[in-house]
Image 1: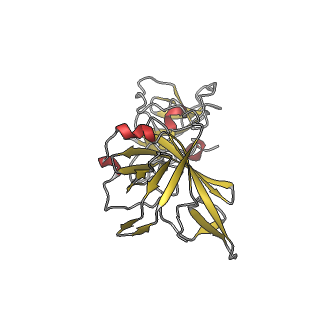
Image 2 (image 1 turned 90 degrees about the vertical axis):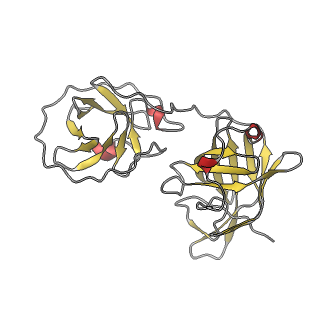
Image 3 (image 1 turned 135 degrees about the vertical axis):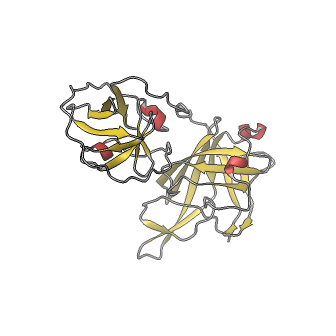
Length: 290
């Protein structure tokens, strides 16, 4: 019997024996970015779909394997989610954007996946005659082969999550509060200096797009709207909803009065990373301290 395989959860107790469906690097097909941003057939994807047995995992030190499935949710705004299940237990959730042509679907995975940089790929597809199944035929790539893989539509479709604004407005006034993904206002900025809202302590300053501690250590980056960690993940914004799906609403916060500025130390050498607005990037405490 053929086995359909896919990626299971990062950090789950089992080790994946086979990785196929959600593998990046399918260079022999057009990339996600080359597919059209809209297509009439996209409406046929909208809904919830459940895969046939797609994953096989095995626990460390055990010869017992567990079949798994996936649940796909395609929203009508080009976004989607995948939930992995092993042994009937949900083990992972990933978010993505998708584009389609007449014969190809492209996935662009966002943060919260097993891919360090998100990752994207495309794969041929077709509908069953009654359009109750989406069929991904067996495909051979330079990196390996994909077995046939099917997902079957289920009902009802849940309401899509709120869509974040594509680009936050640049900050043009002083005293702005920056919020983490969880809606917590943690720092505010005045004259290029970041102060903690809780006690007014100056915890960093920005210069030439880099955020430094007053000891001179590089903390992260600032582009006028987002605060980023050194690895390029966005973790703070004036509106937390700009940080991704399911971000909390901004919570009321009271700013403590500013304390005196410490002396600035020598600046660290910081290589600027490619900045990206990704989901689940972290919280502002990660760079400004607790």
